[in-house]
Length: 558
Image (cartoon, rainbow, N blue to C red; front, side, top):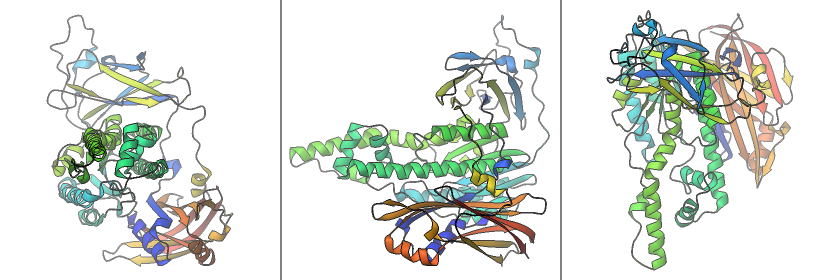
């Protein structure tokens, strides 16, 4: 089981080492061994389809003959067809079918409800992406709604896990209501990029990615910024979104190892994923193949994103100033809805692509949790081969049509990215997590500390001290830059990973900070919660150039 505030511990440790926040960015999250991942087939496209009637209920009883799939307008033969049923659903009303429709006899029956299966709900709180002025309030309302929700949903056969984008305040799947409520209540914002900065991430996206000339004019008026400022802001925003997607994917992979009905409930104020669509599509692929539904909740609800400065621009004075003020007002007003849509886009895509629901434009967050907690009663699984699709990585639009059955809506993934020439291979870093060898490309010293918590559980804290003088840093202005990744994993006597967490440090060290750390070493601390017993501690550290430090040590937790 994975505890706690790994990110907070790292931050406190770094502060104790005299490293200022602008010199380091830390992310951490659950680590799932790649061998536990359900491999994504590169020659097959999986589609999860939910068909709903006029009452919003999922329709059961449909067969392969009821579905038609078009790929960029080209009809595809459905190679495999199956369904997941989690409970009673609405049978299709075939009384109004066309007289000449040839429907299989199998279409008319309603699927029998499946026997109750264990339910696993992963509550994912995005604690790093939001608008600063509202973030604490958004998160607090989301936590309050989530706490009330878990009081209702935690029943025999249901387990809930708590996960965060920052990697702090996390809890593995459990039936313990007190633990779940405590961890939910302890979640805190970890905003890493201010939405009130100038330029803000959305404005930087318009300038750098969309090459929007009106946005460039807005940046000049509002921020007095240069193009390089937009580029810097966008790169930071893109990396933050990339880290968030990686974190969501890690939680989905962890959820995939649970045996039962699985729902990932993602609560977020939204983030920008332009240029990251292939990464998002890989998450959808893995979720579909693992039978995971991702439901998303827009935690900002109905919110006024209009900048306060927009309401206060003086419309009197020199003609040039008035014209600039009017142009600013027009820009902010025109992009009010577009900005929210861009922030919400990844939430909607993850939900739609996995047969889930996106709950938004509503301030009743508790109702949102209740609506999103359960997977659809029936999800149809369709797939078709890609033997004639060019391996060029291009995006293909999908359209799924239901034939000979009345329905209100059809929900399915809108498209997919074609494979590239070579599928991604497991990295050396991931391979080393499950290896037993020792690698010493640079020195790393380890220390551990066991702690008994008030509730009787045990934690083990692993401190890795890296000799940064042996790392190759790059120079950016007056800073030395490096990226260091850590994985701490506890392995039982059967060779299974029982707890693991990953942390990443992006360093931009000033000269005096580097000189000090070159003498003292750089410390990173991760804390895991496990049952008492004997384990092997596997530690893998990688720097940006690919050099590794890997070691295995026996450890007793009692």
